[in-house]
Each structure stands twice: as structure tokens, then as C-alpha cells.
Amino acid sequence: MTKQAKSREQISVFVSVTNIIFNTLLTSFQLFAGIFAGSQAMISDAIHSLSDGLSTILVIIGVKLAAQKPDAKHQYGHERFESVAAILLSAVLVVTGAGIGWAGIQRIIDAGTTPIAEPGILALIAAIVGIAVKESMYWRTRYYAKKLNSSVLMADAWHNRSDSLSSIGSFAAILGARMGFPVLDPLASIIISVFILKVAVDVFRNAVGKMTDRAVDEETATAIRAVVEAQHGVTALDLLQTRVFGDRVYVDIEIAIDRDLPLHAAHDIAQGVHNAVEAGFPAIKHCMVHMNPTAAGEVQ
Image 1 (cartoon, one colour):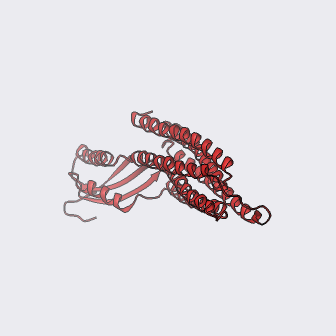
Image 2: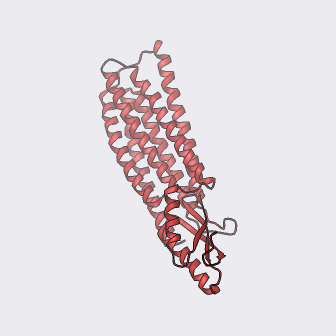
């Protein structure tokens, strides 16, 4: 394992483990508050936090698998395992969101025979705590996800953000229920489920894009072209192809160079392009450079 991969894995696992600890403590408090204070919204919030802990375990598994060195069966590495973990995480979010939404609908339907009780003040306190904890977890996980360019960590960050939004909804609903509108409590569960399902779709689309050789964005492609064309001896950039592989990028380049140059000089130009591209873009795992011979003044 390279030093860079090891560092990436260690940071990701550290972030994930601390998230699990925070989620476990928060889930316990929210569940106690929801049951003790009689709040369906807070119980839904607790279930959402529990799903965060389970999904973070998927994050750790995905990161560890992705950090493995290339082998005979996976000669290009294992980076796509992070995307696989992100897809599994989206499935967890779908199940969680659907379950919470259905529970809220059932509670409203049953309200005709079983009146909805006013939730206690402890549920309101738990909602405030949930907002603070989840929002801090979102920003912390998002920071490391962007630093490491990790799709699975970013998915986990947005899972935390969905929890933060759901806690805000829970707070508003519990407050409204305590002010004489008890139906707002189960209604909040339905709204929370919509947030969760939206995040699940976004996570799934991003992960699938990284599994299907999607090209890099145009801004990055333009920057790569500029680096290549600036290299000494490059007459023209004939072809630039990119594909996202998990959270890394593969680049294929064709450059035009003077056909009268000796082989060693042509090789040095190609090697310079290769080194400049990989050095300038840390997300690029490998750059392949092909040389097209051209006569002086010839346009490809």
C-alpha cells in the first residue's frame, strides 16, 4: 500500500469511526427522548441516526477495500469499491426513508381511533441537540470528503446533513404539537422521509456516474489541456480522453511532436507531459501519452 493510499485510508476510517461514536450516543439519547416524551418525530429521528451508524460501517468497508493494492484480478486497482459502498448506502437510505414515511402515514391514519398525544419537552431538547451534533458532523465529514475526493465520505456527509434537516423538521413539528397541533408530529416523519429519499437519489446518481467511466468536468479537462499544450516540444494536443474510476481519474492523451526528433528526445517530451499532468492533478491515477509524428508546420 502506498503512503498516499494508507494516509487516505487512515483518515477516512478515523472520520468514520468518530461518526459512529457520535451517532451511537445521539441515537440512544433521541430514542430515549422519543419514547419518554411520546414523540413519533423524535423516534423517527433516532431511527435515522441509527441508519447513519450502519451506513458509516459501509463507508469503512468501502474505504478499506478501495485502498487495496492492484492484484492479478484487479490490475487497475480497487477504487470502485468506494462507489459500490456508496450505492449500498443509497439503498440503506431508501429503506430508512420509506420506513419512516410509512410510520408517519400510519400514525395519521390511526389518529381517528387513537388521538395523537402532545409530545413532552424532552423531545424538543433532543431535537436541538440533534441539529447541533448532526450539522457539526456534516461539515467535518464534508471537509475530509473534499480533501480526499472521496465519494463515499461525501455520501456519508450528506447523510448527516439529511439528519440535520430532519432534526430541524422534528423541532418545528414538536414545537407545533406542543402548541396545540399534535398532527404535526407524525407529519414531520413524512417530511423527513422525503429528505432522506432525495439524498438517496443524489448519492446513487453520483456513485453510478463514477462506475460508468464518466468523463471529468469541462473545467478540469480545459486545465489538463492547458498543462499539456504548455509542455516543451508539444506541437499540438490531438486527443484528450478521461474517465473517472471510483474517486480517481485515468487520462489518455495523444500529442503531436516533430517527426524528425530522435527517439530519446521524443520519449523525453512524452514523459514530461506524463509527469506534468500527474503532478498537477492529484486525482489522476495514471496518464497514458501517445505520440503522433508531424512535420514542421503541419497541422493535424
